[in-house]
Length: 256
Figure 1 (tube, one colour):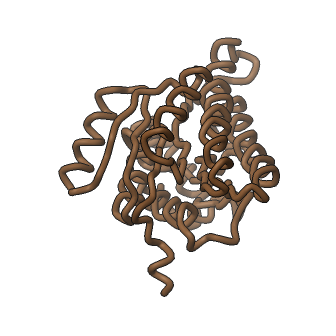
Figure 2 (figure 1 turned 60 degrees about the horizontal axis):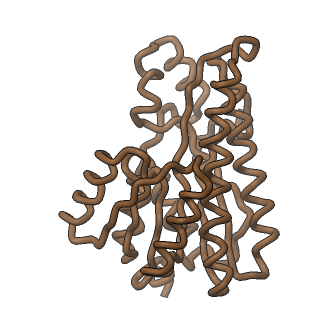
Figure 3 (figure 1 turned 60 degrees about the vertical axis):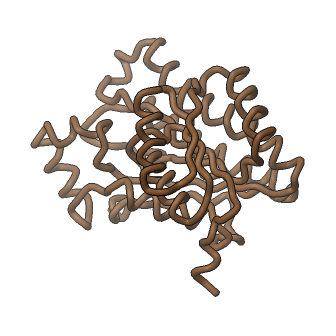
């Protein structure tokens, strides 16, 4: 009975940033649960490689090139995919970091680029795919935020990134409240430092790495699969009473 609530057979899931790291792990988790997967990624090479890996494992998978900051293109893709197959689940994992710049030195280009992908792009995907979910009276959206939306990280400077992820969390709650009576659930995950190419600079800086690990009760970074397992929970009927939640996956980092 309970395991069956994680079953996604017959469902279609679109994952932005699904070509690698957290996005790919989420795609793999949903595929294993039975969903047909649509990888949406800016990087054609990694997107196609991700689809091939899923197909080699026997899963149904498709690739679509996307630039989440292009609202018109996002709307066109949402329309195209929903004409082919109803997209029941949307996971928004596309994002950029670019940490390390002190606030007084942040350029307009840097600030806008982070906000454009992490906030504007996520909103474009949420609203474009939700339109079709609303027409059907059901749908499920999982946004990837960050524990940085709750805290001020140290020792690195990243005010702009922190602000973008706080916006993701509040946007998630706002959309959840707005769409709940239309049958749409919207939740978010807020991971700690996850071992991905985006966070390799952490391990390359021993002083920073040691400080981060000292601040984490569990004493380690996370893995994409640990975020993906939570995405499966939020994307499935197992979490049917949850909407507007931002779930921390931080190894206890925010306990201090």
